[in-house]
Image 1 (cartoon, helix red, strand yellow):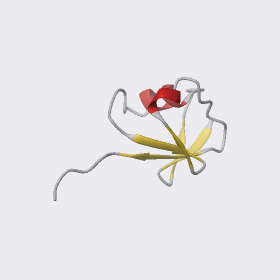
Image 2 (cartoon, rainbow, N blue to C red):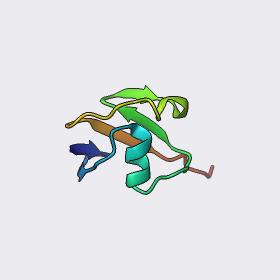
Image 3 (cartoon, rainbow, N blue to C red):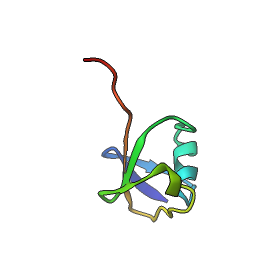
Image 4 (cartoon, helix red, strand yellow):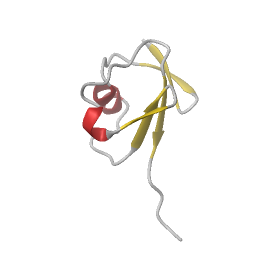
Length: 65
């Protein structure tokens, strides 16, 4: 299916958010996620379905001051 990840198109096979994150190489990285503008906590990624055409935002925490 074709989804948009951080404003870039990606073809993915994963059906759940955790599957898509693994497929994109994020694995167990500490990131924040949102689908179609709605925050998805890490505890719900295994059960959150990703639909064709979804807009996924993945944000990594930044360090510094």
